[in-house]
Length: 254
Image (cartoon, rainbow, N blue to C red; front, side, top):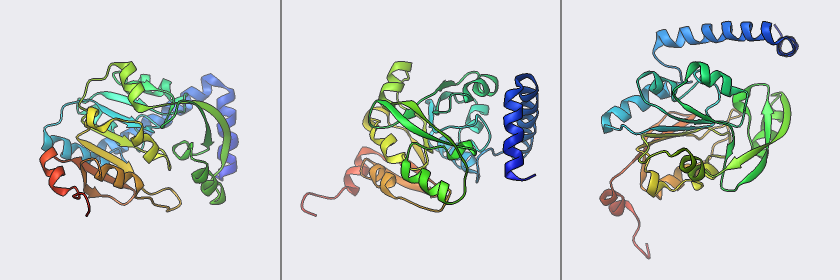
């Protein structure tokens, strides 16, 4: 089936809510069964790496998944949910809330963008939902590469500090995973790392068109984190002790 035919079929299903819900539910059940057998739901096994790292550190706090998208399809945090962890999933696509209530009822889903400011921001929503982004440059790259832009819409943007405070989340975090198609550094700058102290951070550092950025990695390195695993699209980083960070930090004048 061509991409155009799939798009038309989706519009028909959306216009027939009862039929559409049945079809999408059947699709999700099929999507769920195969990764369940394989033991990983993430794109390249990132969730297994994260689970191993958290077990090794004895981490027990909540996770925060920014840019979480679908509750289990290509999810970095769903395996943790199945293993007993709980946390907060944040995504600007508000229609995902129904799926989270079904597949992850014990998690908290928040529909907003995350960044350094507050107010509203333009979301570029793509036919492939996981490519949706508030970064205009990333959106332009995806359009140029042939990805179909469904619409642009204004969504609320909040600092991550404020979201966690409003929810009453208690530090430290076990895991922070960030996949926001180009806006990772802005997300990190909206979080007080010294206060929330995520043990493990997973960052997407490569966009769908192969553009990479080390800015978010450097931001974490300057605040006491080091690379644990480089998985290509994603980098897994761990928090080091304050003493070790002091030894690794440059002295004044260096």
